[in-house]
Image (cartoon, rainbow, N blue to C red; front, side, top):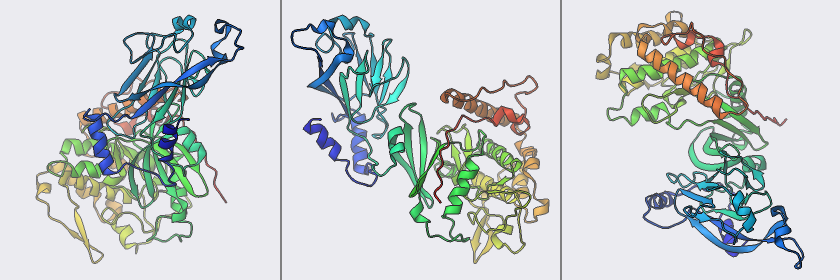
Length: 512
C-alpha cells in the first residue's frame, strides 16, 4: 500500500461512526454540480508480472500465474461512471501494456463499469460486470449483468481471479470500526437516517446484492439496568418484543425485516428502506400543512389494511401515529407501511393489555386514564381517528392540559365531506363498545372509493412483485385468480395473495 493510501485509511481511525458535517455535505454538492474537481474514488493500475524464470517466455504463462509488482499509475474518479474495456472510446482502454497481447481478444468491448450516485457523498461505489469472460472483485466473480458494492482496498481482476490488474480506493467511505465484523464484512455503511429514543437508523447496502436497507441500532447499554416501567419504555423487554413481532409479520403495508443480529452490546435490525420519509414529515411539508381527502384516504386505507392484518393475527400496535407510517417514495401516490412495533403486543387468549403506553396525543382514553382495567385492540381505532384528523386538518383534534383532553376547533374540519367527518367521529367514540372494529371501519362509506381501492391494490401488487424480483430465494407467489376484480378490497383477498414475504435471513443469538 502506498503512502497516499495509508494516509487516506488513517483518516478513519476513530472508534465512533463518522458522518459528513453540513459543510462537507455542501462541499460535496458542489462536487456533484461539477464546480470542483475533488475525486470520489481512485483506481490504481497495477504492474502485473508472471511468476516464471527469466529464461522462459511469458507467453507460456497463464494469467493465474501473474502477480502485482507495484503500481504503474492511478486514475481519479470524478464522474458518475468510469468504463473499462478494449474499446478506444472507454475511460480506460486495456492494452498489451496491461495484459498479454494474446489475451486482449477475450476482453469485452466494455468489460466493467464503476459508478456512483453523487446525489449524496455516502452512496456506495458499485461495479457492474458487463463482460463475457469474467470480472472479479477481491477474487469473487460477479457474472454478466451483476453488480457488487466496491469496498476500500478491493482488487478488481479480469479474466482470472488472480489477475489483480486494478485496486480501488474509496475517498468517501464512512468508517464504522465499532460494528461487528459480520456486519462490516457484508454491509456498506451509508448516511445516517435519523435517531430516536430507542436507537439510531443508518442506511446500509448489502455488498453482494447492492440492496439498500435501514439498519436500526439499539445499544443495550441504554437499557441494561432499566426497570420495565410505564414511563420508561426504552428497555430490553421492549426491543425483544419488537424482534418477536417483526419476525412474524408478512404484509405489504407492514415494514419488513431482512435480518437481525443480536450482540452483547447492541441489537442490529435490518429493515426495509422507505425512501419517502414518514407521514408526519409529509403532512408538515405541504404548503397548506395538511393533505387532500383523496391522498389522505389512500394513506389511511393502506394503514387500515395493515391494522386489519395485525388484529387478525392478535397483535395490537398501541402506537399508531403519522411518525410510525413510512412512505415508499416522495410521490404523493405511494405505498405506505406501518413501523415501530416496540409497544405492540400479542393478545393471546391468556393475555390482557393494561400497560399505559403510547403517544399521549394519539392514545385512547381508556389507556390514558387506565382506570377501567384492561383494554382491547380498539385502542388502535382511536389512534387511527386521530391520525386521519391530523392528515386532513394538519392539527390534533385535542390538546392535553392538566391530564385532561380539550377539543380543539379547526375551521378546516368543517370543510371536509360529511362521510369523512362521520368516520373521524366514529373512531373517536369514547365508549369502547360502540367504537368500530377494523373490519367495520374498512366498510365505511368514506373508504368505499373505487379509484382509491384500485390504486392501493395496485401499489401492493407492484410491491410484492418488486420484492420477489429483488430476493433470489423468494418463493413463487400464486397467480391472482380470476375471481379477484380491480375493485376487490385488499382485506377480502385470499391470504396467499399478500402474506408471503421476501425470504428473510434471521440470525439471533440472544445472550443470557
